[in-house]
Amino acid sequence: MTDVTIRRALLSVSDKAGLVELGAALAARGVELVSTGGTAKALRDAGLTVMDISELTGFPEMMDGRVKTLHPKVHGGLLAVRDNPEHAAAMEAHGIGAIDLVVVNLYPFEATVMKGAGRDEVIENIDIGGPSMVRSAAKNHAFVTIVTDPADYAGLLAELETHDGATSYEFRKLMAARAFAATASYDAMISQWFAFADQQQLFPETLAIMGARAEELRYGENPHQRAALYIPKGPHGAGIAQARQVQGKELSYNNLADADAALELCAEFRGQAPAVVIVKHANPCGVAQANSLLEAWQGALACDDVSAFGGIVAVNVPLDGPTAEAICAIFTEVVVAPDADEAAIAVFSAKKNLRLLLTGTLPDPRRGGLQVKPITGGLLVQTRDNGAITLADLKVVTSRAPSEQELQDCLFAWTVARHVKSNAIVYAKDGITAGIGAGQMNRRDSSRIAALKAAEAAEKFGWAAPRTYGSAVASDAFFPFADGLLAAAEAGATAVIQPGGSMRDAEVIAAANEAGLAMVFTGMRHFRH
Image 1 (cartoon, helix red, strand yellow):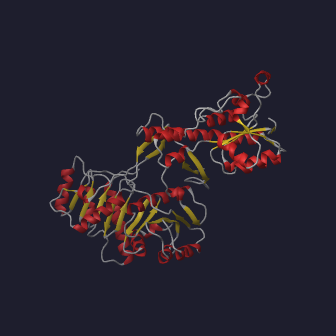
Image 2 (cartoon, one colour):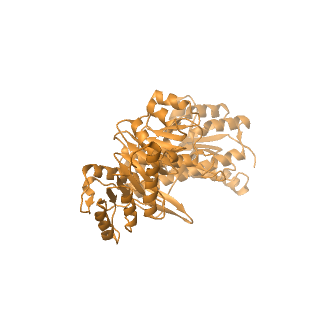
Image 3 (cartoon, helix red, strand yellow):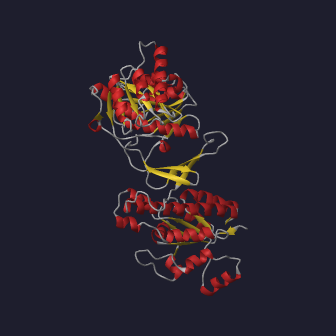
Protein backbone atom coordinates (compact mmCIF):
# COMPACT_ATOMS: atom_id res chain seq x y z
CA MET A 1 0.00 0.00 0.00
CA THR A 2 1.15 3.55 -0.74
CA ASP A 3 0.88 6.88 1.02
CA VAL A 4 -2.40 8.76 0.57
CA THR A 5 -2.32 12.53 0.25
CA ILE A 6 -4.94 14.35 2.33
CA ARG A 7 -6.89 16.70 0.08
CA ARG A 8 -10.33 16.72 1.75
CA ALA A 9 -11.10 16.24 5.43
CA LEU A 10 -14.46 15.78 7.13
CA LEU A 11 -14.49 17.02 10.73
CA SER A 12 -17.41 16.43 13.10
CA VAL A 13 -16.58 16.36 16.80
CA SER A 14 -18.37 16.73 20.12
CA ASP A 15 -15.06 17.27 21.94
CA LYS A 16 -13.69 20.53 20.54
CA ALA A 17 -10.30 20.22 22.27
CA GLY A 18 -7.54 20.93 19.74
CA LEU A 19 -10.05 21.31 16.90
CA VAL A 20 -9.13 24.81 15.79
CA GLU A 21 -5.40 24.09 15.86
CA LEU A 22 -5.94 20.93 13.80
CA GLY A 23 -8.20 22.71 11.33
CA ALA A 24 -5.70 25.54 10.89
CA ALA A 25 -2.83 23.09 10.32
CA LEU A 26 -4.84 21.19 7.71
CA ALA A 27 -5.95 24.37 5.96
CA ALA A 28 -2.35 25.56 5.84
CA ARG A 29 -1.59 22.45 3.80
CA GLY A 30 -4.39 23.25 1.37
CA VAL A 31 -6.78 20.62 2.73
CA GLU A 32 -10.47 21.32 2.04
CA LEU A 33 -12.44 21.26 5.27
CA VAL A 34 -15.96 19.82 5.36
CA SER A 35 -17.86 19.99 8.61
CA THR A 36 -21.16 19.89 10.47
CA GLY A 37 -23.10 22.02 12.94
CA GLY A 38 -21.13 23.19 15.97
CA THR A 39 -17.84 21.94 14.56
CA ALA A 40 -18.24 24.07 11.43
CA LYS A 41 -19.14 27.10 13.55
CA ALA A 42 -16.06 26.67 15.76
CA LEU A 43 -13.83 26.48 12.70
CA ARG A 44 -15.46 29.51 11.03
CA ASP A 45 -15.23 31.52 14.24
CA ALA A 46 -11.48 30.89 14.06
CA GLY A 47 -11.40 32.39 10.56
CA LEU A 48 -11.18 29.13 8.62
CA THR A 49 -13.05 28.36 5.39
CA VAL A 50 -15.42 25.44 5.82
CA MET A 51 -17.87 23.65 3.52
CA ASP A 52 -21.11 22.64 5.23
CA ILE A 53 -22.02 18.97 4.96
CA SER A 54 -25.34 20.02 3.39
CA GLU A 55 -23.43 21.74 0.60
CA LEU A 56 -21.47 18.54 -0.01
CA THR A 57 -24.53 16.31 -0.06
CA GLY A 58 -26.99 18.76 -1.64
CA PHE A 59 -29.36 17.76 1.13
CA PRO A 60 -30.22 19.81 4.23
CA GLU A 61 -29.62 18.69 7.79
CA MET A 62 -32.95 17.69 9.30
CA MET A 63 -34.69 16.18 12.30
CA ASP A 64 -32.65 18.18 14.82
CA GLY A 65 -29.41 17.04 13.20
CA ARG A 66 -30.28 13.34 13.36
CA VAL A 67 -29.94 13.11 9.59
CA LYS A 68 -26.95 14.94 8.13
CA THR A 69 -24.07 12.61 7.28
CA LEU A 70 -26.07 9.48 6.41
CA HIS A 71 -25.82 10.14 2.67
CA PRO A 72 -24.21 8.39 -0.35
CA LYS A 73 -22.03 11.42 -1.07
CA VAL A 74 -20.50 11.01 2.38
CA HIS A 75 -20.27 7.26 2.62
CA GLY A 76 -19.51 6.83 -1.06
CA GLY A 77 -16.60 9.21 -0.59
CA LEU A 78 -15.44 7.13 2.39
CA LEU A 79 -16.04 3.59 1.16
CA ALA A 80 -15.01 3.80 -2.47
CA VAL A 81 -12.07 1.59 -3.34
CA ARG A 82 -10.06 4.14 -5.29
CA ASP A 83 -8.29 1.68 -7.60
CA ASN A 84 -11.48 -0.22 -8.45
CA PRO A 85 -12.70 0.92 -11.92
CA GLU A 86 -16.36 0.24 -11.09
CA HIS A 87 -16.14 2.26 -7.89
CA ALA A 88 -14.38 5.09 -9.71
CA ALA A 89 -17.07 5.07 -12.40
CA ALA A 90 -19.83 5.21 -9.80
CA MET A 91 -18.16 8.18 -8.11
CA GLU A 92 -17.88 9.97 -11.47
CA ALA A 93 -21.47 9.21 -12.44
CA HIS A 94 -22.98 10.45 -9.18
CA GLY A 95 -20.66 13.34 -8.44
CA ILE A 96 -19.13 11.73 -5.35
CA GLY A 97 -15.85 13.24 -4.26
CA ALA A 98 -13.28 11.33 -2.26
CA ILE A 99 -12.88 12.06 1.47
CA ASP A 100 -9.32 11.34 2.57
CA LEU A 101 -9.46 12.14 6.27
CA VAL A 102 -12.24 11.78 8.84
CA VAL A 103 -11.91 13.37 12.27
CA VAL A 104 -14.85 12.29 14.40
CA ASN A 105 -15.52 11.81 18.07
CA LEU A 106 -18.89 10.71 19.28
CA TYR A 107 -21.74 12.24 21.23
CA PRO A 108 -20.89 12.33 24.98
CA PHE A 109 -23.05 9.38 25.97
CA GLU A 110 -20.99 8.48 29.05
CA ALA A 111 -20.87 12.05 30.35
CA THR A 112 -24.62 12.39 29.83
CA VAL A 113 -25.29 9.27 31.88
CA MET A 114 -22.82 10.28 34.58
CA LYS A 115 -24.48 13.67 35.12
CA GLY A 116 -27.77 11.89 35.88
CA ALA A 117 -29.65 13.00 32.76
CA GLY A 118 -33.17 11.77 32.10
CA ARG A 119 -33.90 8.92 29.73
CA ASP A 120 -34.83 11.11 26.76
CA GLU A 121 -31.57 13.08 26.98
CA VAL A 122 -29.58 9.88 27.29
CA ILE A 123 -31.22 8.47 24.17
CA GLU A 124 -30.55 11.69 22.23
CA ASN A 125 -26.86 11.29 23.05
CA ILE A 126 -26.61 7.96 21.25
CA ASP A 127 -24.60 8.86 18.16
CA ILE A 128 -25.63 7.24 14.88
CA GLY A 129 -23.98 9.16 12.08
CA GLY A 130 -20.66 9.43 13.87
CA PRO A 131 -20.08 5.68 14.36
CA SER A 132 -21.23 5.09 10.78
CA MET A 133 -18.60 7.46 9.40
CA VAL A 134 -15.95 6.06 11.73
CA ARG A 135 -16.64 2.49 10.65
CA SER A 136 -16.77 3.38 6.95
CA ALA A 137 -13.47 5.23 7.11
CA ALA A 138 -11.82 2.55 9.24
CA LYS A 139 -12.97 -0.24 6.94
CA ASN A 140 -11.51 1.60 3.97
CA HIS A 141 -8.24 2.46 5.71
CA ALA A 142 -6.36 1.49 2.57
CA PHE A 143 -7.41 4.91 1.28
CA VAL A 144 -8.89 6.86 4.20
CA THR A 145 -7.38 8.09 7.46
CA ILE A 146 -9.65 8.02 10.51
CA VAL A 147 -8.91 9.86 13.78
CA THR A 148 -11.29 9.55 16.75
CA ASP A 149 -9.28 10.91 19.68
CA PRO A 150 -7.93 14.46 20.13
CA ALA A 151 -4.86 12.84 21.69
CA ASP A 152 -3.99 11.57 18.20
CA TYR A 153 -4.07 15.00 16.49
CA ALA A 154 -0.39 15.59 17.16
CA GLY A 155 0.48 12.21 15.71
CA LEU A 156 -1.58 12.97 12.60
CA LEU A 157 0.16 16.29 12.04
CA ALA A 158 3.55 14.68 12.57
CA GLU A 159 2.61 12.04 10.00
CA LEU A 160 1.62 14.70 7.48
CA GLU A 161 4.90 16.52 8.09
CA THR A 162 6.93 13.35 7.62
CA HIS A 163 5.11 12.27 4.46
CA ASP A 164 4.68 15.68 2.80
CA GLY A 165 0.93 15.99 3.38
CA ALA A 166 0.15 12.27 3.16
CA THR A 167 -0.33 9.41 5.60
CA SER A 168 1.31 6.01 5.49
CA TYR A 169 -0.53 2.72 5.35
CA GLU A 170 0.89 1.70 8.73
CA PHE A 171 -0.47 4.87 10.34
CA ARG A 172 -3.88 4.36 8.75
CA LYS A 173 -3.98 0.75 10.00
CA LEU A 174 -3.16 1.90 13.52
CA MET A 175 -5.85 4.57 13.45
CA ALA A 176 -8.39 2.10 12.04
CA ALA A 177 -7.73 -0.30 14.90
CA ARG A 178 -8.22 2.48 17.43
CA ALA A 179 -11.37 3.59 15.64
CA PHE A 180 -13.02 0.17 15.79
CA ALA A 181 -12.06 -0.07 19.47
CA ALA A 182 -13.69 3.32 20.03
CA THR A 183 -16.98 2.34 18.41
CA ALA A 184 -16.95 -1.05 20.13
CA SER A 185 -16.51 0.50 23.57
CA TYR A 186 -19.12 3.15 22.76
CA ASP A 187 -21.66 0.48 21.81
CA ALA A 188 -20.70 -1.52 24.89
CA MET A 189 -21.49 1.45 27.13
CA ILE A 190 -24.86 1.89 25.46
CA SER A 191 -25.57 -1.83 25.80
CA GLN A 192 -24.67 -1.74 29.49
CA TRP A 193 -26.88 1.28 30.10
CA PHE A 194 -29.88 -0.37 28.44
CA ALA A 195 -29.32 -3.63 30.32
CA PHE A 196 -28.45 -2.41 33.80
CA ALA A 197 -29.84 1.12 34.17
CA ASP A 198 -32.78 1.19 31.79
CA GLN A 199 -34.09 -2.36 32.15
CA GLN A 200 -32.57 -3.44 35.48
CA GLN A 201 -31.23 -6.71 34.08
CA LEU A 202 -28.73 -8.26 36.45
CA PHE A 203 -27.41 -10.77 33.93
CA PRO A 204 -28.22 -9.64 30.36
CA GLU A 205 -28.20 -12.18 27.55
CA THR A 206 -25.03 -10.59 26.19
CA LEU A 207 -22.57 -9.04 28.61
CA ALA A 208 -20.49 -6.32 26.94
CA ILE A 209 -17.25 -5.72 28.82
CA MET A 210 -14.79 -3.12 27.57
CA GLY A 211 -11.67 -1.56 29.03
CA ALA A 212 -9.01 0.94 28.07
CA ARG A 213 -5.41 -0.06 28.60
CA ALA A 214 -3.90 2.09 31.33
CA GLU A 215 -0.45 0.57 31.16
CA GLU A 216 1.52 -2.54 30.34
CA LEU A 217 3.08 -4.14 33.40
CA ARG A 218 6.57 -5.55 33.73
CA TYR A 219 5.13 -9.08 33.78
CA GLY A 220 2.26 -11.10 35.21
CA GLU A 221 2.20 -13.30 38.28
CA ASN A 222 5.48 -14.77 37.05
CA PRO A 223 8.25 -13.32 34.85
CA HIS A 224 7.34 -15.52 31.87
CA GLN A 225 3.78 -14.10 31.81
CA ARG A 226 2.80 -10.80 30.19
CA ALA A 227 0.28 -8.45 31.78
CA ALA A 228 -1.45 -5.09 31.51
CA LEU A 229 -3.84 -2.96 33.54
CA TYR A 230 -7.15 -2.00 31.93
CA ILE A 231 -9.69 0.56 33.17
CA PRO A 232 -13.39 -0.17 32.49
CA LYS A 233 -15.05 1.98 29.85
CA GLY A 234 -18.21 3.67 31.01
CA PRO A 235 -19.36 4.51 34.54
CA HIS A 236 -17.35 2.72 37.22
CA GLY A 237 -16.09 3.19 40.74
CA ALA A 238 -12.62 4.36 41.70
CA GLY A 239 -10.07 2.21 43.49
CA ILE A 240 -6.51 0.99 43.19
CA ALA A 241 -6.56 1.42 39.42
CA GLN A 242 -7.19 5.16 39.86
CA ALA A 243 -4.75 5.70 42.75
CA ARG A 244 -2.02 8.31 42.34
CA GLN A 245 1.45 6.83 42.64
CA VAL A 246 3.52 9.37 44.53
CA GLN A 247 6.79 7.47 44.39
CA GLY A 248 8.43 4.11 43.94
CA LYS A 249 9.26 1.81 41.08
CA GLU A 250 6.75 0.48 38.60
CA LEU A 251 3.87 -1.51 40.05
CA SER A 252 3.71 -5.20 39.18
CA TYR A 253 0.70 -7.42 38.54
CA ASN A 254 1.04 -8.93 42.02
CA ASN A 255 1.50 -5.50 43.61
CA LEU A 256 -1.79 -4.31 42.13
CA ALA A 257 -3.67 -7.48 43.09
CA ASP A 258 -2.40 -7.35 46.67
CA ALA A 259 -2.94 -3.61 46.98
CA ASP A 260 -6.52 -4.09 45.82
CA ALA A 261 -7.08 -6.77 48.46
CA ALA A 262 -5.63 -4.47 51.13
CA LEU A 263 -7.76 -1.52 50.04
CA GLU A 264 -10.94 -3.60 49.93
CA LEU A 265 -10.45 -4.75 53.53
CA CYS A 266 -9.35 -1.31 54.71
CA ALA A 267 -12.51 0.17 53.18
CA GLU A 268 -14.52 -1.83 55.74
CA PHE A 269 -13.24 0.70 58.30
CA ARG A 270 -14.13 3.78 56.27
CA GLY A 271 -15.05 6.64 58.58
CA GLN A 272 -14.01 4.71 61.68
CA ALA A 273 -11.07 4.83 64.09
CA PRO A 274 -7.57 4.53 62.55
CA ALA A 275 -7.05 1.07 61.03
CA VAL A 276 -4.10 -0.69 59.44
CA VAL A 277 -4.26 -3.70 57.13
CA ILE A 278 -1.18 -5.72 56.16
CA VAL A 279 -1.63 -8.08 53.20
CA LYS A 280 0.64 -10.75 51.80
CA HIS A 281 -0.30 -12.74 48.70
CA ALA A 282 -3.88 -11.40 48.74
CA ASN A 283 -4.48 -12.49 52.35
CA PRO A 284 -4.41 -10.22 55.40
CA CYS A 285 -1.69 -11.20 57.85
CA GLY A 286 -2.45 -8.46 60.37
CA VAL A 287 -5.31 -6.01 60.97
CA ALA A 288 -5.84 -3.60 63.84
CA GLN A 289 -7.83 -0.56 64.93
CA ALA A 290 -6.64 1.84 67.62
CA ASN A 291 -6.79 5.40 68.84
CA SER A 292 -3.82 6.34 66.66
CA LEU A 293 -2.51 5.06 63.34
CA LEU A 294 0.84 4.22 64.88
CA GLU A 295 -0.82 2.05 67.55
CA ALA A 296 -2.88 0.34 64.84
CA TRP A 297 0.31 -0.37 62.87
CA GLN A 298 2.00 -1.87 65.91
CA GLY A 299 -1.01 -4.10 66.61
CA ALA A 300 -1.34 -5.28 63.02
CA LEU A 301 2.38 -6.00 62.71
CA ALA A 302 2.48 -8.02 65.95
CA CYS A 303 -0.08 -10.48 64.56
CA ASP A 304 2.44 -11.93 62.08
CA ASP A 305 5.56 -9.84 61.57
CA VAL A 306 7.22 -12.65 59.60
CA SER A 307 4.58 -12.60 56.84
CA ALA A 308 4.46 -8.79 56.93
CA PHE A 309 7.99 -8.67 55.46
CA GLY A 310 7.60 -7.59 51.84
CA GLY A 311 3.89 -7.01 52.32
CA ILE A 312 1.31 -4.43 51.30
CA VAL A 313 0.02 -1.91 53.85
CA ALA A 314 -3.29 -0.04 53.63
CA VAL A 315 -4.62 2.54 56.09
CA ASN A 316 -8.04 4.16 56.36
CA VAL A 317 -6.89 7.67 57.37
CA PRO A 318 -4.15 9.98 56.08
CA LEU A 319 -0.65 8.77 56.86
CA ASP A 320 1.48 10.67 59.36
CA GLY A 321 5.24 10.85 59.79
CA PRO A 322 5.63 8.58 62.87
CA THR A 323 3.56 5.82 61.25
CA ALA A 324 5.53 6.15 58.01
CA GLU A 325 8.79 5.77 59.94
CA ALA A 326 7.47 2.63 61.66
CA ILE A 327 6.34 1.14 58.36
CA CYS A 328 9.74 1.83 56.80
CA ALA A 329 11.43 -0.08 59.61
CA ILE A 330 10.60 -3.29 57.70
CA PHE A 331 10.71 -4.04 53.99
CA THR A 332 7.35 -3.00 52.53
CA GLU A 333 6.40 -3.22 48.85
CA VAL A 334 3.39 -0.87 48.68
CA VAL A 335 1.61 1.53 51.01
CA VAL A 336 -1.97 2.58 50.21
CA ALA A 337 -3.65 5.52 51.92
CA PRO A 338 -6.36 8.08 51.18
CA ASP A 339 -3.71 10.77 51.73
CA ALA A 340 -0.37 11.46 53.45
CA ASP A 341 1.07 14.50 55.18
CA GLU A 342 4.36 16.12 54.18
CA ALA A 343 6.27 14.38 56.97
CA ALA A 344 5.10 10.95 55.80
CA ILE A 345 5.95 11.68 52.17
CA ALA A 346 9.41 12.86 53.24
CA VAL A 347 9.99 9.63 55.18
CA PHE A 348 8.95 7.46 52.25
CA SER A 349 11.08 9.44 49.81
CA ALA A 350 14.15 7.85 51.40
CA LYS A 351 12.85 4.45 50.29
CA LYS A 352 13.08 4.86 46.54
CA ASN A 353 11.62 1.46 45.66
CA LEU A 354 8.66 1.64 48.04
CA ARG A 355 5.47 2.50 46.15
CA LEU A 356 3.17 5.03 47.82
CA LEU A 357 -0.37 5.09 46.41
CA LEU A 358 -2.86 7.78 47.41
CA THR A 359 -6.50 7.04 46.62
CA GLY A 360 -8.09 10.29 47.80
CA THR A 361 -10.94 8.33 49.33
CA LEU A 362 -11.92 4.77 50.19
CA PRO A 363 -14.39 2.76 48.12
CA ASP A 364 -17.78 1.94 49.56
CA PRO A 365 -17.52 -1.65 50.84
CA ARG A 366 -21.28 -2.12 50.36
CA ARG A 367 -21.32 -0.93 46.73
CA GLY A 368 -22.95 -3.10 44.11
CA GLY A 369 -21.60 -4.29 40.79
CA LEU A 370 -20.49 -7.49 39.12
CA GLN A 371 -17.31 -9.52 39.46
CA VAL A 372 -15.98 -11.42 36.47
CA LYS A 373 -13.64 -14.41 36.62
CA PRO A 374 -12.34 -16.16 33.50
CA ILE A 375 -12.48 -19.95 33.37
CA THR A 376 -11.53 -22.25 30.52
CA GLY A 377 -14.05 -21.57 27.77
CA GLY A 378 -16.11 -19.01 29.63
CA LEU A 379 -16.64 -16.33 32.24
CA LEU A 380 -18.07 -16.66 35.73
CA VAL A 381 -20.05 -13.58 36.70
CA GLN A 382 -21.47 -12.83 40.13
CA THR A 383 -22.61 -9.87 42.19
CA ARG A 384 -20.07 -8.46 44.63
CA ASP A 385 -20.01 -9.93 48.12
CA ASN A 386 -21.39 -6.76 49.69
CA GLY A 387 -23.65 -8.41 52.28
CA ALA A 388 -23.33 -7.07 55.80
CA ILE A 389 -24.53 -8.00 59.27
CA THR A 390 -25.13 -5.96 62.41
CA LEU A 391 -25.48 -6.84 66.06
CA ALA A 392 -29.22 -7.19 65.51
CA ASP A 393 -28.63 -9.94 62.91
CA LEU A 394 -26.69 -12.20 65.27
CA LYS A 395 -28.39 -15.23 66.73
CA VAL A 396 -27.06 -16.56 70.03
CA VAL A 397 -27.11 -20.38 69.87
CA THR A 398 -25.19 -21.39 73.01
CA SER A 399 -26.16 -21.48 76.66
CA ARG A 400 -23.88 -18.56 77.37
CA ALA A 401 -24.42 -15.32 75.48
CA PRO A 402 -21.32 -13.36 74.54
CA SER A 403 -20.40 -10.29 76.56
CA GLU A 404 -20.50 -6.85 74.98
CA GLN A 405 -16.72 -6.95 74.45
CA GLU A 406 -16.91 -10.44 72.97
CA LEU A 407 -19.59 -9.24 70.54
CA GLN A 408 -17.39 -6.38 69.41
CA ASP A 409 -14.48 -8.77 68.94
CA CYS A 410 -16.75 -11.14 67.02
CA LEU A 411 -17.80 -8.42 64.59
CA PHE A 412 -14.20 -7.27 64.09
CA ALA A 413 -13.02 -10.83 63.44
CA TRP A 414 -15.96 -11.37 61.08
CA THR A 415 -15.08 -8.23 59.10
CA VAL A 416 -11.55 -9.48 58.57
CA ALA A 417 -12.59 -13.09 57.86
CA ARG A 418 -14.70 -12.09 54.87
CA HIS A 419 -11.46 -10.92 53.17
CA VAL A 420 -9.42 -14.07 53.96
CA LYS A 421 -9.17 -16.92 51.48
CA SER A 422 -11.28 -19.94 52.44
CA ASN A 423 -11.14 -21.86 54.62
CA ALA A 424 -10.77 -18.75 56.78
CA ILE A 425 -10.30 -18.56 60.54
CA VAL A 426 -9.58 -15.25 62.30
CA TYR A 427 -8.92 -14.72 66.00
CA ALA A 428 -9.32 -11.15 67.27
CA LYS A 429 -9.24 -9.33 70.58
CA ASP A 430 -9.65 -5.63 71.38
CA GLY A 431 -9.66 -4.59 67.73
CA ILE A 432 -6.51 -6.53 66.82
CA THR A 433 -6.15 -9.77 64.90
CA ALA A 434 -4.44 -12.38 67.09
CA GLY A 435 -4.05 -15.03 64.41
CA ILE A 436 -5.21 -15.65 60.83
CA GLY A 437 -5.54 -19.03 59.12
CA ALA A 438 -6.12 -18.86 55.37
CA GLY A 439 -6.54 -21.04 52.32
CA GLN A 440 -6.50 -24.44 53.98
CA MET A 441 -8.40 -27.45 52.75
CA ASN A 442 -10.14 -27.92 56.11
CA ARG A 443 -11.25 -25.57 58.85
CA ARG A 444 -9.45 -27.41 61.65
CA ASP A 445 -6.06 -26.78 60.07
CA SER A 446 -6.90 -23.10 59.58
CA SER A 447 -7.79 -22.89 63.30
CA ARG A 448 -4.51 -24.52 64.29
CA ILE A 449 -2.35 -22.48 61.93
CA ALA A 450 -3.85 -19.23 63.19
CA ALA A 451 -3.30 -20.34 66.80
CA LEU A 452 0.29 -21.33 65.99
CA LYS A 453 1.02 -17.86 64.61
CA ALA A 454 -0.42 -16.33 67.78
CA ALA A 455 1.76 -18.56 69.95
CA GLU A 456 4.85 -17.63 67.94
CA ALA A 457 4.05 -13.93 68.38
CA ALA A 458 3.61 -14.34 72.14
CA GLU A 459 6.97 -16.06 72.44
CA LYS A 460 8.71 -13.46 70.27
CA PHE A 461 7.32 -10.44 72.08
CA GLY A 462 7.45 -11.95 75.56
CA TRP A 463 3.73 -11.89 76.24
CA ALA A 464 2.37 -13.90 79.15
CA ALA A 465 -0.02 -15.69 76.80
CA PRO A 466 -1.00 -15.63 73.11
CA ARG A 467 -3.59 -13.04 72.16
CA THR A 468 -5.93 -15.85 71.21
CA TYR A 469 -6.58 -16.27 74.94
CA GLY A 470 -9.90 -14.55 75.59
CA SER A 471 -10.36 -13.79 71.89
CA ALA A 472 -13.27 -14.15 69.51
CA VAL A 473 -12.86 -16.44 66.53
CA ALA A 474 -14.61 -15.99 63.18
CA SER A 475 -15.15 -18.66 60.56
CA ASP A 476 -16.14 -17.58 57.05
CA ALA A 477 -18.38 -20.64 56.66
CA PHE A 478 -19.99 -23.11 59.04
CA PHE A 479 -18.01 -25.66 61.02
CA PRO A 480 -18.91 -28.99 59.35
CA PHE A 481 -17.52 -30.81 62.39
CA ALA A 482 -16.73 -29.79 65.93
CA ASP A 483 -12.97 -30.30 65.46
CA GLY A 484 -12.28 -26.82 64.10
CA LEU A 485 -14.23 -25.20 66.89
CA LEU A 486 -12.49 -27.33 69.52
CA ALA A 487 -9.12 -26.31 68.07
CA ALA A 488 -10.16 -22.69 68.58
CA ALA A 489 -11.19 -23.45 72.16
CA GLU A 490 -7.80 -25.06 72.77
CA ALA A 491 -6.19 -21.83 71.51
CA GLY A 492 -8.07 -19.91 74.22
CA ALA A 493 -10.96 -18.40 72.25
CA THR A 494 -14.03 -17.69 74.35
CA ALA A 495 -16.49 -16.57 71.66
CA VAL A 496 -17.30 -17.78 68.17
CA ILE A 497 -19.01 -16.16 65.19
CA GLN A 498 -19.94 -18.30 62.19
CA PRO A 499 -22.73 -18.56 59.61
CA GLY A 500 -24.29 -21.80 60.89
CA GLY A 501 -26.28 -24.04 58.59
CA SER A 502 -24.36 -27.30 58.91
CA MET A 503 -26.15 -30.63 59.23
CA ARG A 504 -24.08 -31.02 62.40
CA ASP A 505 -24.93 -27.65 63.93
CA ALA A 506 -26.39 -29.39 66.98
CA GLU A 507 -23.14 -31.30 67.48
CA VAL A 508 -21.06 -28.12 67.12
CA ILE A 509 -23.32 -26.16 69.49
CA ALA A 510 -23.08 -28.94 72.06
CA ALA A 511 -19.29 -28.90 71.81
CA ALA A 512 -19.30 -25.11 72.26
CA ASN A 513 -21.49 -25.41 75.36
CA GLU A 514 -19.24 -28.09 76.82
CA ALA A 515 -16.19 -25.88 76.26
CA GLY A 516 -17.94 -22.87 77.78
CA LEU A 517 -17.87 -20.90 74.54
CA ALA A 518 -20.40 -18.28 73.55
CA MET A 519 -21.40 -18.64 69.90
CA VAL A 520 -23.48 -16.60 67.49
CA PHE A 521 -24.72 -17.44 64.00
CA THR A 522 -24.79 -14.83 61.23
CA GLY A 523 -26.82 -16.73 58.64
CA MET A 524 -24.44 -15.36 55.98
CA ARG A 525 -21.40 -17.05 54.46
CA HIS A 526 -18.35 -15.30 53.01
CA PHE A 527 -16.36 -17.82 50.97
CA ARG A 528 -13.47 -16.21 49.06
CA HIS A 529 -11.58 -18.26 46.48
